[in-house]
Image 1 (cartoon, rainbow, N blue to C red):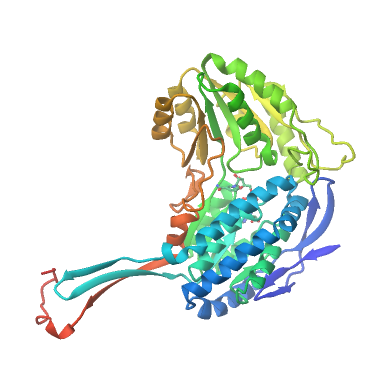
Image 2: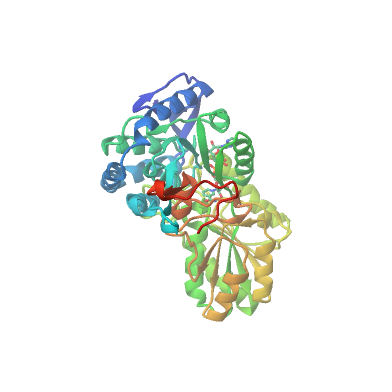
Length: 497
Ligand code: NAD
C-alpha cells in the first residue's frame, strides 16, 4: 500500500516519521494509502529548509517571483483533471466540484501574479523642507499553513501563493484525511521553477500542529478549520509571539422572503446545502423561511432534495458524493436522529441511503428537517453534512435577529425581489460574507475572505489585500536631501516646517 511522504527542501522524504494514519476512498470505504504523521523533528527539518531558502527568496526580485507564479498558474490549468481526480478519490466530492475548487483557488494565484501592484508603497514629497516620506513592505520569513479536509487544494491556495509572492517561504500541514493533493501542488511549484525549500509539505496530526505553533523560527500561522481548533491555534501561536489568522466553523443561514422566486431560491438552496455533501464552510445549513410562503418553500425543497443523485465522485451522473469518513457519516446520521427526537419534522430522511455496488462507502443522503427551532441541536451544532434545517420566522426582523444571535457569522444569503429588504439585511446582519440572491457568496480573490464572531478568531481575514498585509510588515522611511541644508538639530520634538 502507498505511503504518502513529506516534501521537504524539494525532496520527498519520510524524515523521522514512523507513525501513520489511514487514507480512505470514501466511495468504497476501503483504505487506499497511509500518510506519515510528522514528529516535531520533521517540522524542524521543514522549517530549516524554509529558513535556508528564505535567504535568497526573501531577496528575490518581484519579476522573478511573478515569473514562477505565472508558470505555476499554467501548470494548475494543465493538471486540473489529475488534481481534481486526486481530490475526489480521497475527499469523495464529485470530480466537477473538485475542478471548481481548483479554479477558485487558482484565482488567488492570479491575484498573486499581480503582486507588483499589490505591494506598491506610497510616497509623499516634501512633507517638510527637503524631507520626503515613503513606505514599503517586507516579508516575514518562514510562515506556516494548517488546513482542513474539505478543500484540500483551494484553502491552502488562499495562503501560499500570496505568502510566496510577498517573499516568504512556506510550510504546509494539510489535513491528514486527504493529503495527496498537497504533494502534487509541491511538484507543480518545483516544475514552475520555485527554488527548493520555498514550499514544503509536512503531513501530520496534532503533534505536527503543536510543533508549528511553538516553533521559534515560524513568524506567522494561517489556520482554517473548526472553531475549537481555531481558538486553540490562535491562543497558542499568539502566546508564542506569532501573527495568526484563524478561520473557524460556520452555520450559514439563507433567508427566503415571501416575495422571492421560490423555485429559484429552492434550486440554489438545494445545491448550497447538499453540494459537496454539505462539507463546505459556506454551505447553507439553515433556511429561514419568512411568512406564509414557508410551506410552499418546503414542498419545493422536498422535491428537489429527493432528486439529488448520490453516487461516487468519479461518476459524472452524481450530484453529490460520500462524506469523508465513517465517523463523519455516523455523526450526521445521529444529528438527524436527534433532530427527530427533539421535535423537528423529518421531511426527507437521508440516513438509510444505499448506493448500489458501494455498500462500504461513507454515503448519507440529503436530509431536510422542518420546524427546527433555535434550541434544537440540529440548529445549534455545525453538522457539516447534507442536512438542511428549516426555521420559520414571521418577519425579516425576526430572521435577522435569529442570525445575529447565532455564535457563527461566516456567510449568509437573502432571497428576495425587494432591494429595500436586501439593503436592510446587509446593513443589519452580523456576518462577514453576504449574498443577495447568491447562496454561497465566496468573495473573489481580490477581496478578502473571512467571517465574523466564532467563524474568525483574531482580526485577519484571508487572501486578497488582507493576505498581502498579513504576510508582510511595513517600514516608513523619512529622508532629507540635501542633508546639509538642514537647520541645526533641535532639542524640542521635531515638527514640519
Ligand atoms: P479540523 O479543525 O478538525 O482540522 C483542521 C486542521 O487542524 C487539520 O489540519 C487537522 O490535522 C488539525 N487539527 C485537528 N484537530 C486538532 C487538534 N486537536 N489540535 C491541533 N490540530 C488539530 O477541521 P476539518 O474537520 O478538517 O474541517 C472542517 C472544519 O473546517 C469545519 O468546521 C468547517 O466549517 C471549517 N472550515 C472553515 C472554513 C472557513 O473559511 N471559515 C473553510 C473550510 C473549512
